[in-house]
Length: 131
Image (cartoon, rainbow, N blue to C red):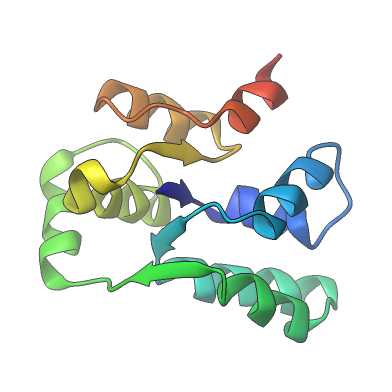
């Protein structure tokens, strides 16, 4: 399953260079997973930018959302990753999910580096933005 963070999911709603690839990913049968934080963050993006909440719900319907448990929060603390709070929680979620996460799709350089450090490969679309 591809772990999706908000920097990637938001590109399906906002016209940016990588948007076409992200929209194609949602349209295909790829299995997507994220922390429930994605729903909170994506709706905040929608509210701030005056975008369609309906489109955000449609995107979120395509993503399996993992619960933000006390164990995930503790793991984020224990990792001492140096990441911003929500990114630390995303990293902890990925690590807690274990091998079902086959790659990370994010456009956040710090989160990408932390994921690689912990053995989580990046999805090719994430690498396309860095090129």
